[in-house]
Length: 539
Image 1 (cartoon, rainbow, N blue to C red):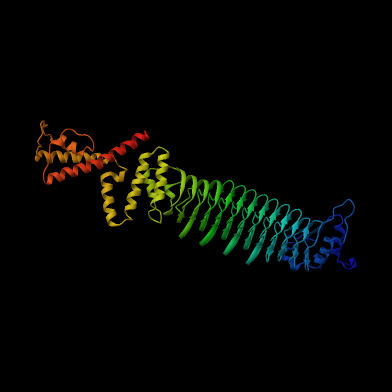
Image 2 (image 1 turned 90 degrees about the vertical axis):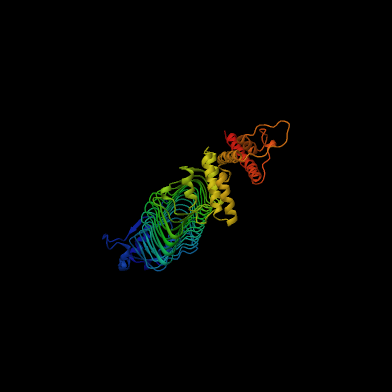
């Protein structure tokens, strides 16, 4: 480059480069120094991109004992700053600058890049290697920020950045690798899709106070995202469009405390197959207008939905299908509007609240060790009967087992009896008739001592009948005196004798009555014996 052709601001930058000094072209007027007015800046604040390029690729050597750098403030950069595949060994620090054209850093090797408070029509840094920080704090970038395949060894700071590309990708960061933290906070705003699929973050990913807007699709597309520490989408985080974390891995905890997600009639939060090493907080004001899904997710600690508001109309508002979690805090601020699907989830402790149960549930296959609060069997049966799939045997079995494990055997039997009764509603008429008989006589075997009442009734019935119609006495050397009470009791007893039955033989209809008493006594007696055995074994 011919140094004689440089303009005064370019000469100043050229001279300052060797020692890394900063050149400030600002006017001192805060309004006019806003990069939004960059198109109005005159020649005295204009620097050609080719001058920046020449300095960055080695046109001037560093002064001995000094660190060379391009440090420029308040400049309008004209032309194309194309550093594609370049090896840049010095820092680039531009503050409050305006770019006529989008810089191209694709597959470049950079030392560190600071574009703070700048205004750019785009930034292409696909495959770029930054050996240091990429600092974009406070900048406005329209036309898309491309960081796909880039590798940043330090921090990626996009605090307060505004990305404007409503019809496309506001941030394209597929397979991005950042060894430290990523900051998309303090007013970070994106109009268009924010893409982080397959990205790897060695520290924390922070979206606090961020606003993402892409109502026609995904506001945040971060499938297979891998974050070594925590993810913060809280403290005023807002997303208009789907937040997609499917298959992502979080080494710390995921916070969506107070987040507002909106994607009406569709999926607002898709965290299927998510893996979190500690806790997930969708709590304390978390709101989702659209579906929330943690299907197949694995949460080592607690998934908290305490104080959340979930709604998806006629669809599934919350899916925990196949979720694996140590604890689930399912105590939203109000009843879930839509279906809550807990089918085939495996949860150690499930905390819920009858006041905020979803009106429609799916519970088949749900496995848990503890329910908090345990509630009575009748209350929990109301929970099971909200299942939209109707009668399913597994939820009853699981609930009965839980009651038995904490010593509430009576509640466990109540649940199993309810299971038999609810199953009867799905059966054919002949089976229903048999079921009604089983229920009335012995409560399907879960009310065995009800059979004792029937035995007493049969004993009274037989005593009256055979008192009025004494059966003929058989020929025998020693014939006992007839006693209607003991004769009936002898018929009822399935084993042994009281010395009455062998000596008396009723005739006609009374023979049928006697046979009926014998059969009924056998069945009811065995039922009573089985119930007594179970009671003794529990004691």
